[in-house]
Image (tube, rainbow, N blue to C red; front, side, top):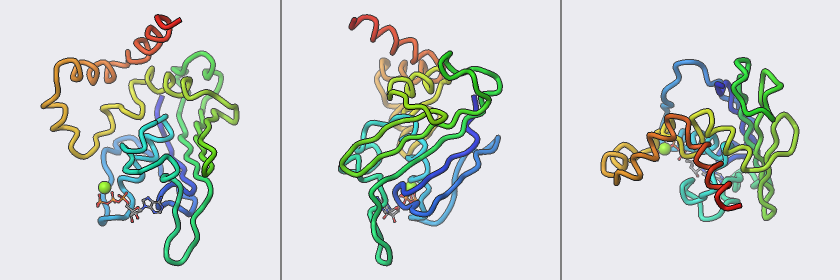
Length: 183
Ligand code: ATP
Ligand code: MG
């Protein structure tokens, strides 16, 4: 599975509909301070199920919605869609009928957020497993945030093991085992 495109609408500073092509070999984003580089990475993580608004530099989940600027009013919703190439049919069974998966997360002010895959309502859990099985996700070591390298170098063995397990694509198995143990 490969993410090929990111579409934002009303997410943080991206008030105009914006599309980013994620082409093979893309490893970083450069641009002037404040142009929205970190916001792009946060949009990617948010669509993959990030639940911590703090880790997206907000004080509440609604802070991902465009809050307005001098010359334009804020919005009441935000939406991010990830386009995934599934032509190799590596997605979990319930999503594995299509060549392209469009994963959308949408938030309405004061009403929370919801997910869809190819137009069908899905649970946050399904999204988490979809990405964990593909060795990526909102907390994936594939997305290197500022300060993260230092954190990993200085982390306790347990935490470092979790990073390696995420990278190996077995985090989804742990999630399923954890759920099974709770039943
Ligand atoms: P740097 O090079 O400093 O790391 P950057 O390119 O990573 O900058 P971001 O942090 O992605 O920039 O973008 C910051 C901009 O996004 C700021 O101008 C901030 O006001 C704007 N912003 C963040 N959240 C919102 C929001 N909810 N509504 C409108 N604008 C927002
Ligand atoms: Mg930044």
